[in-house]
Length: 248
Figure 1 (cartoon, rainbow, N blue to C red):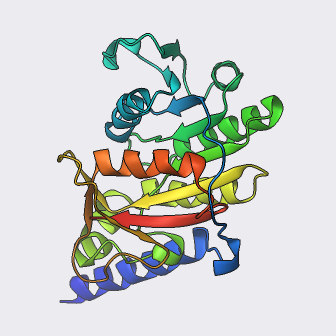
Figure 2: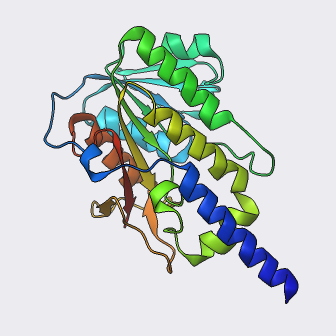
């Protein structure tokens, strides 16, 4: 019984820490309306679940897409408007080369190094932001997650008291650094915080906004819907310099 109580206390302290460490926007931070559609976009994290959807859907929408990947053979997409650049997001030179000439960046960075402290997300994002500043690229749309900042606890009890404290504490802590880094930049940024990700078919219908999610039930969304929402933010100022939770 004591062990259970200690674990519950740990989970609650971690949730409070993630709430404090992640970015919190005031309602006044959001924008509104739309802007000119970009034509050239860079996808970082293109071989991950959301990244693959971003590449496929961006090509379907007519964008000229550049994908920065460590292993090009994992992308398995052949399209006349797709350029694949081999490189690591932790290599500042490779990132700068990929960012040069783009109109916007879509970041869906992820990894599976869950059980040790890591700065892959935050350091990779730092390289992206520096390259964007150097090459005058303004718009950044970045995927993080519900469960941090002012969405702490909103992935549901299962994630709050099991998945995040046992499996993902280091991963989520790095996401808070990633968000603060983005929010402190001079880019025209949008942070997209999905619920638990699935490989289901796109539904085309989802809840989005600040304060969405659930403290009780696990909220989920297909990666295909997350990608569609992220692409919509390229030409929308609704969540400019703010974050939006999204779930089905």
